[in-house]
Length: 165
View 1 (cartoon, one colour):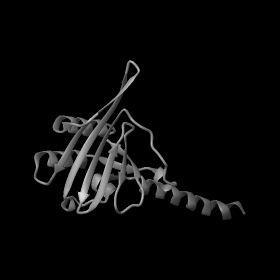
View 2 (spheres, rainbow, N blue to C red):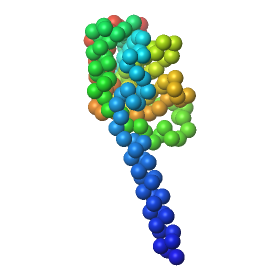
View 3 (cartoon, rainbow, N blue to C red):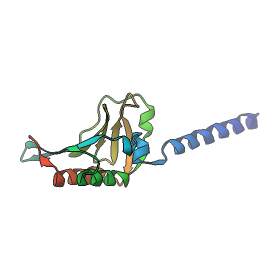
View 4 (cartoon, one colour):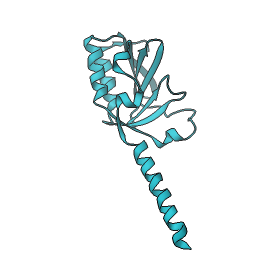
């Protein structure tokens, strides 16, 4: 009687583990966002750094606007993102969270696909939140390298202009 239930249980467990491994497999930035590089009509980015010094909270922002194909900054930005590997989080299978924790530094990139918007928010936890027209909610991915938020923020700070604080 035990074998009758053991074999199906092992098969179900193997399918579950296989499904999890497939769902969380490494994918490219393009696969994670569902974007086609040739369909991007523009990009912009913002880096936000929050800090506390002597009990006073300050926020600094840097931004890059109106990036288009062929511009040096645009091509360099896409090169940074193309070197990123994403793994889908199992949290995506749960109901959407109402909020995410705030970080000391966050980098946000927005892409225009005609009249559709795709946003990529990189956090210090090694996670990226991607919202795109194809999905009705924001999906969570773990990224490699984990320091993508710092890399993007440095890129925006070096090539962007300071924003209003």
